Length: 166
Image 1 (tube, rainbow, N blue to C red):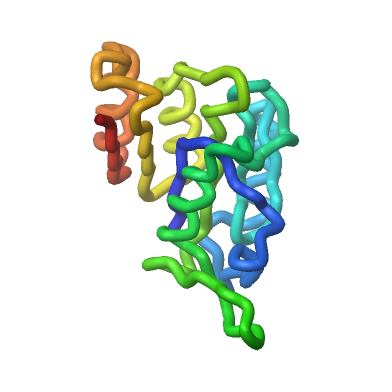
Image 2 (cartoon, rainbow, N blue to C red):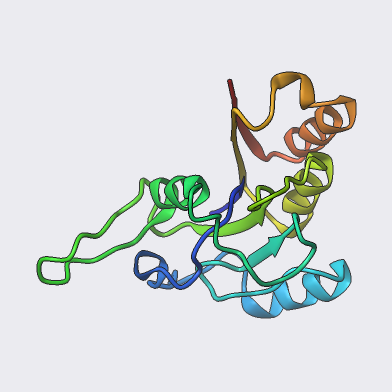
């Protein structure tokens, strides 16, 4: 299963995202081909087959702002695969074998509000689930007609879309 997280970013090197799925849905060869067609984004590993910083339109700086670890938290709740290591803390998510697609839309000083593009990219790249925990940074009114059409595009293709705004 591949879960796209549209949020503030993730530390792709975090210790609780280092166990690779044994039989990944999105393979390295498949993703590299799709990324070449897409023209942006990067393949990190089998756990995180897609990552892109939509705020700055670049493949780097994927970690969330220091004061906003929400994307990291959401990703961990979904698919962290931590293991005991002495007295060190670790996290195991509800679906530790899932792959995570990271679509960073919240940055230090700006936000990407082209949700339709991010939703469609997630669908076209193979997401089974899209999680958008947009919180207070985006109001329900900000989900414009294009965004709503993108959600319908995802649903019509069998993708589960979870949106949380307040």
